[in-house]
Image (tube, rainbow, N blue to C red):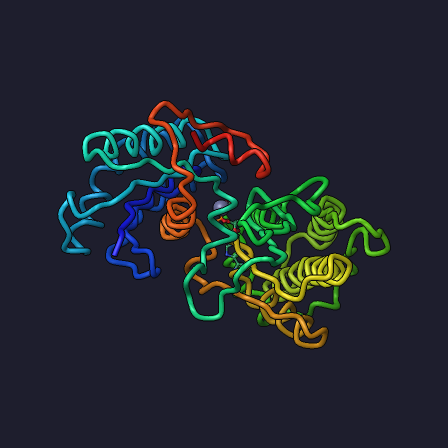
Amino acid sequence: MKKILAFETSCDDTAVAIVDEMGKIYGEAIFSQLEVHEPYLGVVPEIGSRAHIEQITKVTNEAFDKAGLRRIDIDAVAATFAPGLLGPLLVGAQFAKGVAMALGVPLIAVHHIEGHIFSGFRDEGFFEPPFLALVVSGGHTSLYRCDENYRVALVGQTLDDAAGEAFDKIGRAMGLGYPAGKRMDELARNGNSQRFSLPVAMRNSQAFNFSFSGLKTSALNGIVQNAPMDDQSVSDLCAGVQEAIAQALCEKTIRAAKSLNVDRVVTGGGVMANSRVRQMLKTACEENGIGLYLPKVRYCTDNAVMIAKVGHIKLSLNQTSSYRVDPCASLPIEEAFSLVS
Ligand code: KG4
Ligand code: ZN
């Protein structure tokens, strides 16, 4: 059984995993930089790069210890090479190259969004392509079509803020720390989503694009007008924002699936951990006869298992990379092939 050692360092998590071609996870370790960046209420790339350098050897050793495997048991090394913060990407990419060269095994350079799309590959309920993929994270809110040959193309995306970014910016204005999405999900459970009037943008547009900056502005106005916010108002606004985001995601996804004639939807990205988004999308897909794959909550946010899964797909398609490939901060998914030699 082929085993891939995978690294994910595109943002604020140093993540390492060892996964086999059937999706079995042997060992997994992650160092989250949340506390490192928390005082700045956002990710500081240079501080992040340094933290990745400090942690990557420890996290790798931990993954091997949990797996009970030796270095020579590894058949290939995969790492996120794009898109992301260049400094953090460089740390993971160079470390991965070094390990691949030392072991004399293939290197597989992975596109981060491919990771989110295929995070459930080989898990129960995951679909064979073709399917539509919805990726909703702190940096992306996009719909993609994946064809039979695992080629992915963009169908629509946010024209301004990503959904996770909207959660984080609105949450930050309410003093909920960074990132705020998870906390807002918890607080929304006691909230009335109808209290604040918040827009669902581009409802009538036929394109498959999203926009969340109007929602952000309305929510920030609501915060100013109701200052100081009591606990109930905070919960109500969390519930309202969550509802508006869930509605926008559901409507565009169903419309895109119908218009592209696909009856399977795969999802991924940190915001797919949101309980209301999951529930609303599940109901909408059931009502429209569309199959839905929701990843386990812990594999929605950034992790190295998803990078290993893409690594196995690419290894089976012989799409390995040169040891000379360089990471890249921004790379459209259609150009992910440029990472393959
Ligand atoms: O995929 P991810 O870990 O990193 C990126 O690639 O961006 O996503 C992080 C984003 C953050 O914006 C965070 O607030 C959001 O996912 N998030 C959530 C939840 N858990 C994480 N948003 C809403 N509800 C959640 N339960
Ligand atoms: Zn991500």
